[in-house]
Image (cartoon, rainbow, N blue to C red; front, top):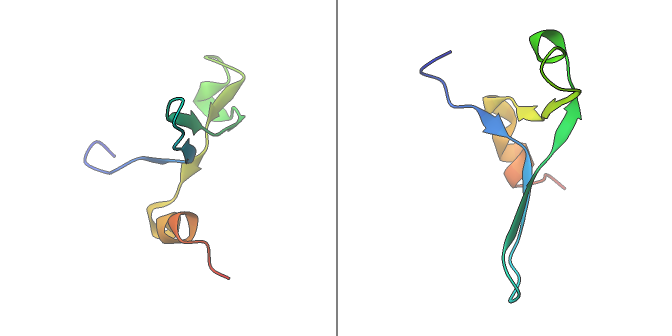
Length: 56
């Protein structure tokens, strides 16, 4: 996994008062449970197109 790209779900909002970016999270699983109760929502690389360009 060291050479793979990790895609995290997020929302970007461009605003004259200041741009904003939020990373979406979910309930922690596996080894992350001992670190924090939430973890970033990871998107499978094969699904990134569906996230960026929502199919109608």
